[in-house]
Image (tube, rainbow, N blue to C red; front, side, top):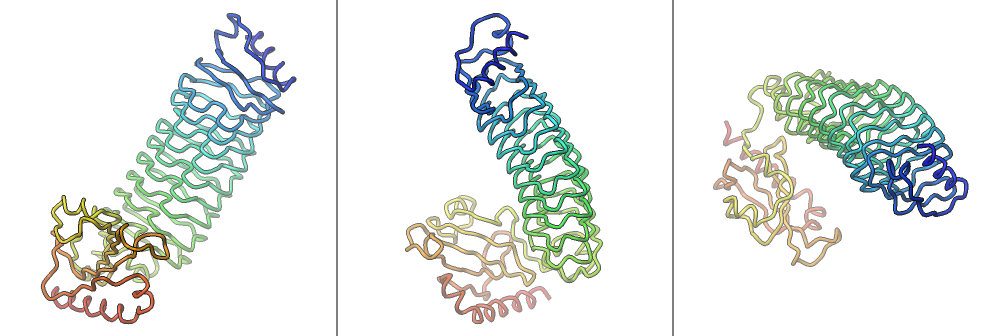
Length: 398
């Protein structure tokens, strides 16, 4: 062990590439084809051993330094370390044990993506936790975040499917998009009182969360924030919230209690929940659009599923029914001339009322072949058409 440390220390001091000497002490722990250490930065380290010790003096684990080292199970990092670079340990599937030194201030993009870590304690001096830092660490069960951390970047803990409990630091101001998306085992989430912003899909697919309290400083709950949280039963909303996206609680089929001063303001977001059915019984329009059809779909796929009036050569975005019962379907084809968004020219169809088989009801009109440009510039006419269709839906449901 001492022989290996002396060898690595010599490389750090010289800042040069050097062939690894042969010897049982080094071969026992590290078998390497080559090392590259420049100016205190480890930029490459080919490893086929299970255990690695990095000596003092190293300042940074460089980008992709241990990328794909599948044999690595444990690594000891020096207290001198200050930064872990992008993708530094990505794909180290068997890396289960690592203590991140107290002096580390930055963890780069995807630094531990697809790692086998079971627990992580992040240092108190950490200032930057970049996007996808621990993305898809499926064995990760617990995380301790530093008290002074102000932002968790997007996808930081996406699909950490074993993560069970999460206590966020009091100084946290922002949670990035999809930061904890698909953390299916997550049951307890305590949002700090100082939180100001939650980005879209932050907790989407967290199927085990049962309750959530949104802090007073959060003014908006964006698209998909808690979508697919099928066990979510209780939500406390702050008085100051001004907007809740209609898909914020999409698929929250067990949401029975919502503490809110004026639920009617957020009807679009709550109308499909058990809470709304008790709060305003009889007001939910019986539009039975299968939820698995909402979103982007190909015409061929829809044809295969039996929805025969969809053109198989086109692509579709099917919207969730609005509070008036109108379902809007955007369609386009790659063969159409490209419009301003780069896709084929988009046609807008409105199937005003859809039954379970997605068949049109006779007498309920649709608007065919209207381009995005025409709809945008003739919005009043489209609003009138939609209003007529909504009135027809109400008449049929009386």
